[in-house]
Length: 246
Image (cartoon, one colour):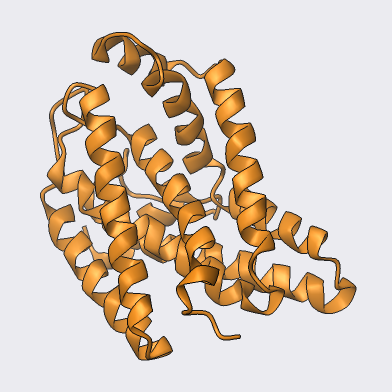
């Protein structure tokens, strides 16, 4: 698959942008370009939120715009994975049964409670960031969270068919190096390196826990959950890291 087709597939599967995909399902190349989708979604959410603040100076609406734009532009695909994982992974049952629950489009009580808690934490995290810092913060969090799961598709087999995308190991390594370089070049702060490394390690820990609950593999839902939780964790960490300008 050419680079342009891989990028088109990434936007087709992981956003609402009307981009045609030439593949029937996400493959390693599409996953490898997933962080680029984060650039567009995070950047758009941050810029629109800052624009709203410049006119109304109402922080509540700034936060609402940031969340709504992020969720809508992604087609809520990662949120849906998070909700499914709340229902499946928190159950006390067998890995096979958890995989069945992940296929169920309905959401139960675990998902409802999980979404409520996530929303509270997400809103609080955004409230701790100055509106002027939204474009950089939301873009960084969206890209880094998505980049953190790329290599996982090569490390872990799919929980249902035991397949894996070996090329994603290289894509993930490249994104890791690129983010480290850009973070330091733009901030000149060693803390930015720590934040990137911590995000990737956090995703690795979540993947390990999730894979054990599913018998050794991961699914698309688990990747969505990892992206969602990591992105919110980054929004919490950024104001405390000293990376953002005062």
